[in-house]
Length: 89
Image (cartoon, rainbow, N blue to C red; front, top):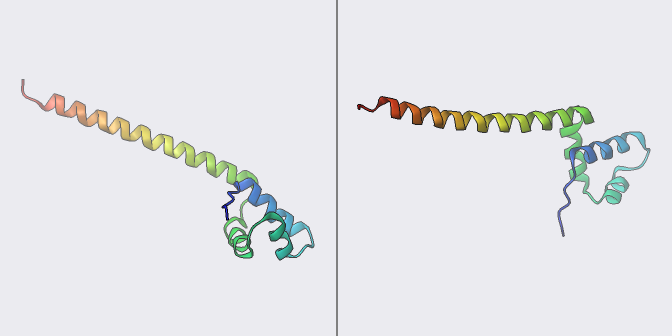
């Protein structure tokens, strides 16, 4: 059985649909191709987030990763320059 990957926006839409409709959770899950356990796990994880919050969080994580790589590069350059300067000529 192949594993489906849902984006955070899709997950939020499914959770919102569950809140707004009077449909049973099992029927909703079978229609979207997920298990009940997955739905409840999503609900505990994303219950307090809105779609904008999840987008902003993803942007912040990407920016954080970019900044970490910049810091790592600058640290390596700094160490190399210190080695060159510390040599006795």
